[in-house]
Image (cartoon, helix red, strand yellow):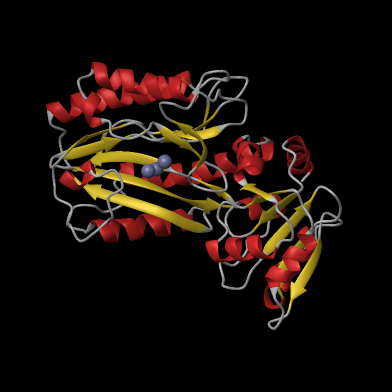
Length: 359
Ligand code: ZN
Ligand code: ZN
Ligand code: ZN
């Protein structure tokens, strides 16, 4: 809260309004229900801060000392008017990027005077991107839990051949929960030619013997996300695929090693891209190298060409290059990494090879 207030002062922002989305739980540990009833934290650098919350949700709010007061609103009250009165004659207001347009438009009409409106992420984005020690530990615990599921995939404990992608996806989801996640965010299972689509929806295709199965899965554990991709092969690996995988493996390892404090995000992306281009698959690496991760599975900083941001200790992100040949196969290798003064700290260590499974 102190860091948020200091950054608001630095940016000359009087009031920060937080609603649904990850900023609110990141800051106060409370997740607003995404309802038609407005929940909004009014953070005010000029005085007291207030959490405006529907009366029926108020019992879920944990007291936070004197950081903010709770203002429950009754079914017949107008929460927009309550928030507008709290905001008062602010000159500069930042509002949660995820606030629904109906609330933003109503608030803009209700707040008196001609305030300047900015995105809430100008305040929260850079702060959320830099993880403190407790957050790094939470990412590591979530990563270790995802690793245990990846190990089950690689050991053959998860049956593949003869099952549909959707069945395997549901199985992986159950295992993420069994290993300690509170919530499954996604479990991509893409087999054979389907793996050429990076965000393939696991569907009715039955997994065959002798093909690649790309599994990209993650969830939320104690408020922080995991995200890992491993590919396995249901039978001996054809030499062309083995050669491509070794290029991918080298690219991923090189980008992880390049993710040091002071390196730019775009340089890390370029490191992976150069290895894949040298291997002859430049056109087949069709997405950025990675995304930040924390309370959300995708957040700042993005490891992408054009992002000159330099890595700081505590920046946490994925390194996940891929090679996709339309209609044939696709492969991706993903770990979560934290930049630290002692070098890149990986949150995943499941086997990085294209493991052959008899499953
Ligand atoms: Zn993705
Ligand atoms: Zn992923
Ligand atoms: Zn990812």
